[in-house]
Image (cartoon, rainbow, N blue to C red; front, side, top):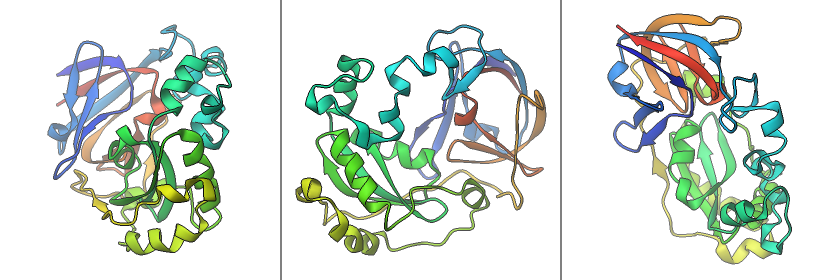
Length: 264
């Protein structure tokens, strides 16, 4: 079977294990059903996720011009402490920023390669944890806007990492942590403005990924250097496809690439 479309991050359903779907404009693949099958990926061209033009992708699936113009790629996306919509202050598009920023956000701990702190909209739980390849996670605070979540994350970053080591995550070289204990330990560092939103009675969430075999020495597939690849799919974790020959392919990192995928 052959499928063609522009890559966007895989959609997921939490389960035992998590279910993954690669969605194209006119088709979709249930990726769990491809495990242990030969899959080929052929890079055809670029297509910006915003303007749909055939322009080289710069970051996050967008061409250079769109990345520096649209609100979906503004600095507050990566640095939520820079959010200003709650003050009525516009960055690129106040209507969009109010819609996204002024809604419940969660600061959480997730264990992907080690314990890290992160921020997401409440509606993105547990999707955000799945996308990061976290096998366990827990909420710390639930606040009414993105700014409060951002300043809380900044304060906690002095005491816990905010990065994921993708190689460690994919090799599954991780240990279970007591995230309730971590949450309680970090409570004292929550900023005063967010302290009332601390969550103290919740339990950690555990996630199970569809993996038959983890790579020992993962090597990342670069479609620009190697526009055609073929291998046996052995697992899916985070937004990565993992193949028998140790090759791993980051779907999220290749958004905006138009590919054809063949399954044998």
